[in-house]
Length: 336
Image (cartoon, rainbow, N blue to C red; front, side, top):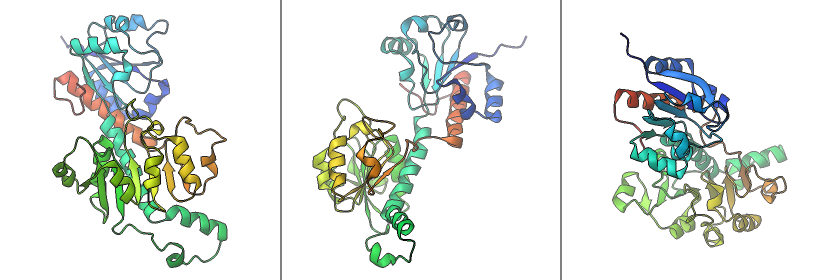
C-alpha cells in the first residue's frame, strides 16, 4: 500500500502571487513529496477555510494573508508540522499567542529572508558604483544640454577608486552580503555594527566604525537597519549634517528609520544627495512631497527586493525547505 503524502496548503495575499513564485519545475518537485492544495487561502478567517485545515501538515506562505493564524485557528491544525515562507519571516503569519503555541508544539519554521536579501544587496552594489561614478548627474545634464560634456571638468571627483562606502547595521543579512560584493572592488568599506567585532568585520574586508565615523567619512552611506521602536527616526539631522559635501545617502531598508523632515531639510541645501527606494511616512510617496522635484534625489518604488523573475528564487527556497521538513533534514534558513 502506497503511503499517503503530507498535505500542504498555500496562503498569501494576493493569491496570484504564487504564480510568480513558482514555475512548472518547482511545482513538479513539490508535488513529488506532498499533496498540494493549490487553492490559495488569502484569509484564514474567510468562510469555508476552517473545513480545509484539519488534515494540514505544512503551510507554504507568502506575503500576507489578510487574516493571521490565531490560537483558535492553529488548534484546527493538530497535524501542522512546519511552515515555509516566501518572505523575510514566518512570525507575521501568526498572532503572538499562536506563535508561542507553535513554538511549544515544535512546529518548524523557515523563511526566505536571506534569498530575498540577495537582490537588495545587488541593488545597493549597483547604486554605489553608479553614484560614485556620478552617473545620475551625468545622465541628467547630458539630456538637458544635448552637447559635448567635458567629463574631467564636470565630474572631477567621479569614480570608484579608493572611495569610502559606509554601511549602517552591516551585520544584517543584506549588509553581510553587500560587504561580500564590495570586497572585490577598490573601495574602502566602513561597517557600523554592534554585534560584529573588528576581526569579524575585517573578514569581510571592512573596517569597524561607529555611526558618526560612517557618516562623516563616507562618500556614500548605505542603510540596512530594521524599523523597530528603538531605531525609528534614529538617522536625523545630526548625521545628515556630518556628511561630506557631495556625499550620497542610500536607503533600501525602511523609511521609518530616518527622520524624513531632517533628511529633506539637508537635501534642500543641495549639499548632499540621496537614493531612496523606501520613504516614510508615505509609500508610495505622496504626490506633493518635495523629494519629487529635487535634482539631487533618486527615487525608486521599493524595487530593491525580489521582483519579476527573482521571485522564483524564493519559491525555490520554499520548495527546498518543505522538502527538508518532510524528509526530516536540516533546514537551510530555519527560525528559532
